[in-house]
Length: 94
Image 1 (cartoon, rainbow, N blue to C red):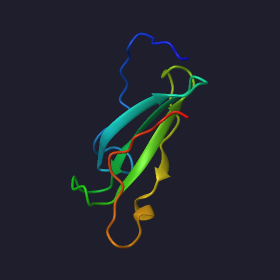
Image 2 (cartoon, helix red, strand yellow; image 1 turned 90 degrees about the vertical axis):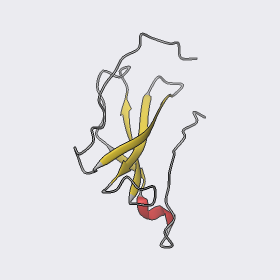
Image 3 (spheres, one colour; image 1 turned 180 degrees about the vertical axis):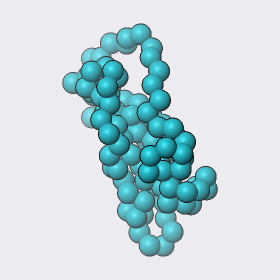
Image 4 (cartoon, helix red, strand yellow; image 1 turned 120 degrees about the vertical axis):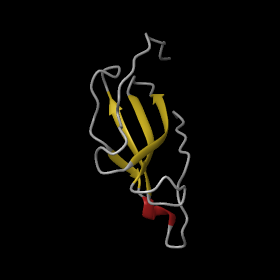
C-alpha cells in the first residue's frame, strides 16, 4: 500500500498553454508501484461539454518531482460521429 506523503502542488496544465485552450476535471491516482498519474479533460476550443475533449494523462515516477509530457488516452473522436463526448474521467487503480 502507498503511504501518504507531504502535500505538494504543481501546475501540470495551464489554460491557454499547449495544444488545448482549457483543462478541466483533474484527477490523481497512485499505482501499486508508486507511479503518480494525473489525468484531466483537455478541451480544444470551448468550455462547452460538447466541444472537442480529449482525456489526457501525465505520469510521474518520482513522487511528483518530474512529469512526462502529455499523452492522449481517450481521443475526442472515440465517441463516434453522432456528437457523443467523453466527460468527467475517473481512474481506478486495479
